[in-house]
Image 1 (cartoon, one colour):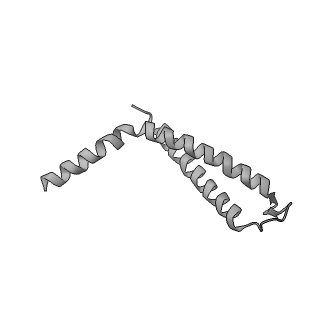
Image 2 (cartoon, helix red, strand yellow):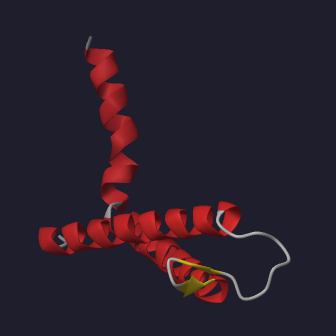
Image 3 (cartoon, rainbow, N blue to C red):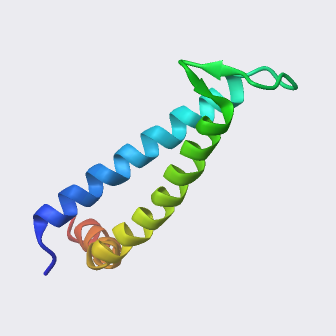
Length: 89
């Protein structure tokens, strides 16, 4: 059995990675004008925003895979449990 603290830490990191990826994606989509080099937003250059988006996106993918591995038994058993509860009614 996986340590519950490890699951909580993993879930928090997954949430942070998702939020940062979403915010940087929105900043990159709507915060910069196209074709103007050297732009900054909140004192951070566009290249840095892109790097943050890419690295947190990669972390998001890795943490999602780990999340599925840690919760695989729950994911696998959930349909049977839900189906069984519907049959009892």
